[in-house]
Image (cartoon, rainbow, N blue to C red; front, side):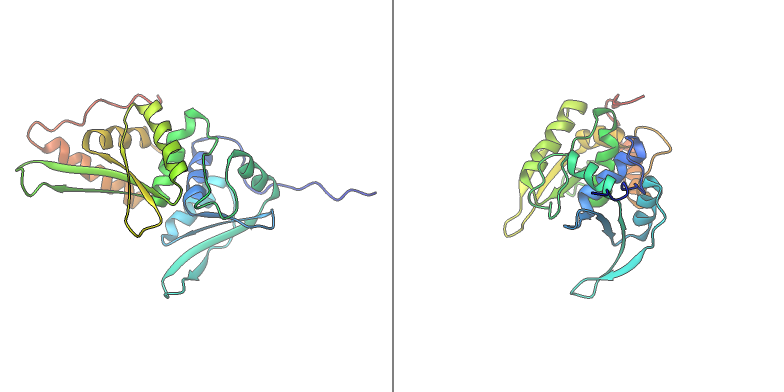
Length: 231
């Protein structure tokens, strides 16, 4: 019986800061088709799609995609059997949102993965406390429909950065949130943005950078211990 040609991969499959970041984006907003071949990423931010393609070294089209409510997003899709199999091997699956448990990312690249996941399913917010004058609140959070994944993600960050965070659910919502407050959020931010340049969504990075700038300028403001995750 004559064998068919061996599959040829289109995307990079070697662990690096860029690749781990792209895997983080896929974990948050990606999709593995059930055909065993196609991989796609959808985002409301076109820049995120461009960054994803750059990190994987692929040149695919970016298409517009509309939800049932008429909201517009951007999407890119490509076929790559070898990358598809690789992603299955590290823990991603089709229809993963509620069944995802963990992703086998090397420790040295975990914060790149976390930054990618943050750019997909995370947010930061900050504000001056209305009760305590000069008290500035700063938070970083991640959301997921899989409590098991959130527990794994939290445990990984705790081991690497020695911060705990807190997990909470939402009544009537199908997702849970992992949240880090002020000092822990500062350590986490330093862990995710440990050097420059790194792949990141610019608007989210600038928002965090502005929060840290305000904390520094507050009376007695301190950025906290420097994360020593990677040199």
